[in-house]
Length: 172
Image (cartoon, rainbow, N blue to C red):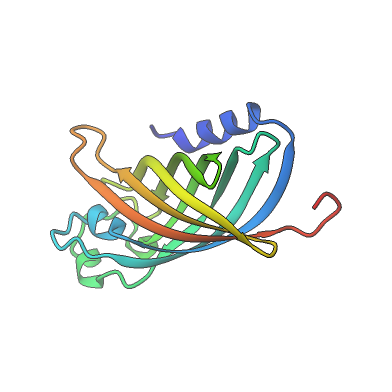
């Protein structure tokens, strides 16, 4: 599991068809990821912001990666936790692969938090709905992630609104 993100990226690049679309990605989300990683009983939902890159191949399969930051994390819970890097808690890298089914999409997503708690790697399925306004593609996604791969007892919930803006270049 240590090298999952690298393996997922390599498989995505090897088995994808030529690129059809490149996009910037900006999103905002509401999730209980921070409280689940800190093993907090409160289950507090926090706002998160993220940015990154996404691409869509000629089959319509979409993949992407980016950075996310969770806002409003209880600093008392962070200072009392067993995090290995308390200053970077809330900053994470994520990757995803989605297959569109008309306006709906299904896929998988992984997140790695740089605070390095015992539950800092989260992986799970996503389902989403997308629509377009002018040149912007907007996705509303739900992510159900698992952060305990021994007894599968710790799950996270995330609702995300993602805006994708096209790169302006020769091919777009």
